Length: 122
Image 1 (cartoon, rainbow, N blue to C red):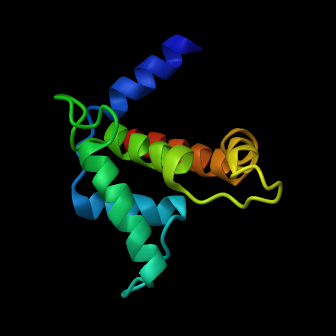
Image 2: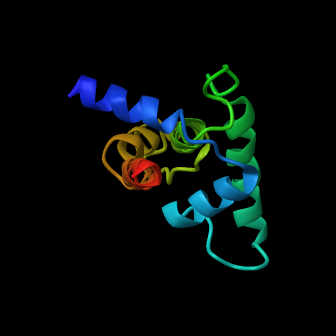
């Protein structure tokens, strides 16, 4: 399974993506709605993911920058580190964030991001 993942990741790194392509990808993933004018919240999400697309962890490396792999990485980094999680335990949000990342809406977001990224190379 690691070999399959590696092939998919390498394929994603071969697909160039512009900022316009990133916006379309974020719409397909469901992070922003397909509207002419974005809400302030949607614009903030778009700005943060766009920033991560450019300078997120590893996304500025040659062969990664400006690719579908960088777009997928930007969404996973956003989901894991920047996306707000509801805190109902009074623990500073750690448990809520961990549950979301591993089993909840964060995990669902990352799976949708993967599915849509893989669809780009088909």
